[in-house]
Every structure is written in C-alpha cells, then in structure tokens.
Image 1 (cartoon, rainbow, N blue to C red):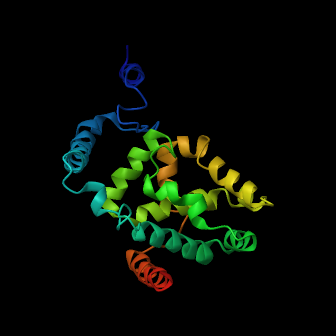
Image 2: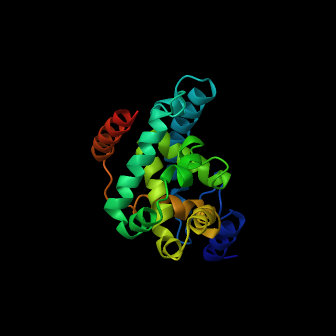
Length: 215
C-alpha cells in the first residue's frame, strides 16, 4: 500500500462527526490533528468549568438573564419588549403584522425566554446556545430569537389571523433549520446583523421604565 492509499485508509477510519457533534471538513489536515485537539481541549475545559458552576448553583444562567424568575417577572417582560423593539428595527414587516393583529409578544415568545429554549429547540441546539450564553451573555437570547424570526419571515407574513400567527411561531422552532445545530449557530451570528450589548442595555432601560410607569 503506497503512502496515498495509507492516508486515505486512515481518513476512512476517523469519523466525520466527533463526540461533541462537530463535523470535520473533507480537507481536514490530519497531520495537524494533535495541535488542533490541544486547542480543542482548552475550549472544552473552559466549557466544563462553566457547566460545573451551573450544576453547583453558583451563578451560570442566573447571571446571564435579568430578573426573569422574580414574582413580578419584570426582567422577562422587559426582554420581550426589547425583542419587540429589535424586530421593529430589523424586521419591520413582521412588526407591522404583529401590530396589525394586536398580538402581544408575550403570547409568542415567553417560553423562549423563560425556558432559555429548553423544550423549544432540539437539545443539541439548546446546549450550543447555552455555551454561547455563558460566553457572550444574554444578548445571545435575542440573536437566537431574531434568527428564528428572520429565517422564517416570509412564512410568518403568510399569517392572516392571531391563531395563525401563534401556530407559525410554534412551527418555526421545528425542522431541519434548528436541528442542524452547527449551521444554526453560525446563522445566529450573521442573520441578525450588528447587535451590541450597549444597544440591548439601552433598550432594556427604556422598556423597563415604560413597564414600571404602567404598573
């Protein structure tokens, strides 16, 4: 067996999908695998530390969201209003549809926020979202929500009634788009466009003040 045949046979013995769900490209350089995996282990160690803190109850998700679980749920209500403002800025046609039918965003996305997409999206995708939530902060929640809405904008705009809108929002959390977690995670950093934490903070302050004035 010549060197080329041995290299091809070696590649055939290595799975394309590793134990963490990452797919290696066809042109993966197996000669550099050791260096790659050393870097990979550093990333996995950081993730393991963050998950350990979560499981021990020492912060984790609680530090990434703002007052979602208090009796008044002010943080949850605030972030739903923030999403509504972001949709008005980035997806005005969808915002117009919601306003035209008088649909409250809490009716559509409250479970997305309060469950952090658990039981909403496939578990593999949820775990990837939580990895990013720990590293990037709570703006990831908005990136995921905006990506789901933008990717299915034409489908949502077909709705002609409140029940129809609610049904379409249920459907957009299913299917190949959310199942292919690697592609989905790439999309959440491209589809919504620019989304700074400064913007989120500013919108949170204004939306929270408006909610408090109403109460």
